[in-house]
Amino acid sequence: MVNTGPVTELFRSADLLVRCRPGADTSRWIVTFDSFSDHIQFDNSPLDRPAFGEEFLIRRGYSIIAVLGRDNRWYQYPEITQALQNIAAVTRDAQKVLAYGSSMGGYAALRFADAVNAGIVLTFSPQYCVNPRAMPFERRWHGFCTSIDWLPEWNGKLTCRATPLVLYDSRLWQDVVQAAMIARDTPTRRIPLPYAGHPVTPFLHELRLLTDMIPALLEDRFDVQAFQRAAHARRRESRNYQEQRSRFLRKLWPF
Image 1 (cartoon, rainbow, N blue to C red):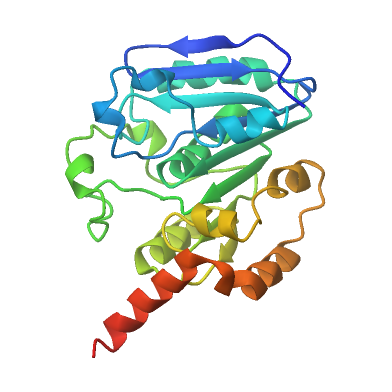
Image 2 (image 1 turned 30 degrees about the vertical axis):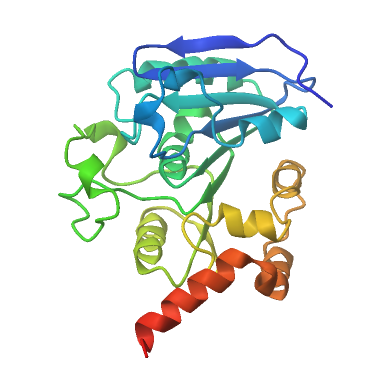
């Protein structure tokens, strides 16, 4: 199965691109927000790269809208509001819309879910906020975040009509706090994955748990408890799990 419709641009500026790739079924859309990348600033045409999960979703024939930023700015572009309005015009009459993202893309999926009419939100290791003034403990991307002009309309208290799924490493304290902040503001289904790392997607890929997540969510058959049982049962098959667990234990007992 492959995508069948023409690829169009719903929005483009110097800093932001929204690419629309309809599949055979346009009653269901996936809006994917691209992730943080150390390599973006070295790419001569960064907006024309594949977005998070885009190639995976294309191969499976989904109707997708991919959102990409020029740099690691957590989508704090003044034109993001217009871009989201253009997405909403496509998804307004859809039966189902899934917002999708990992880490920085997870932040965007949460913050922009209502704006793009998402009834399902799937995020991996997302942030509630990385603004140093609001979250001084969060130092992982400090060099990038200090220069961002944070847009007040997309920060502060989080609102989300859907109940987002938040998958995160429950042994990584920064991600635990971020998940707790998300759940403080809006009803959330948290899925802790001990020693999965940041982001948790490589761990899930190693355990072959990513492939069925989206169809299961779109078809209302995703079983959170069965998913967690499978992750726990297979966890030692993951190299990421082994490395993260060893690193954690060395901090507790470094001898």
